[in-house]
Length: 97
Image (tube, rainbow, N blue to C red; front, side, top):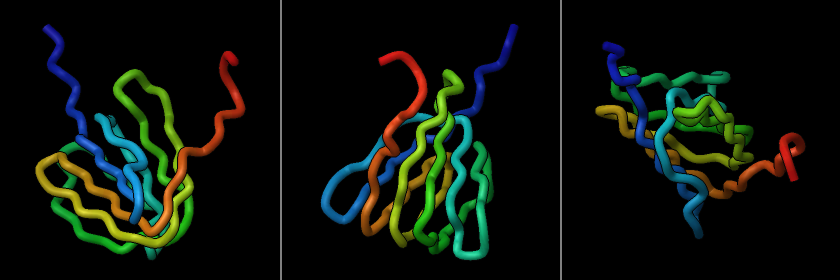
């Protein structure tokens, strides 16, 4: 019997609106010292992030990308909060219209 895949609960918010919320298998964040990957069961973390692209891989394997401005992340007990000045979904250029 296959064990359930571990997931992260992600909540990304900008100063004036929610950006994305859902579950993910991994998240890549533009950290102040470079790209940072967050996986389930990562150690607790509080970090500043810089402008760039946040990439979220959902449980189906689909990648969601978001352009964000400066902000911070908080991660504990498989819950990731990403708070940014500005954030928006990147326009998809592939897939079915």
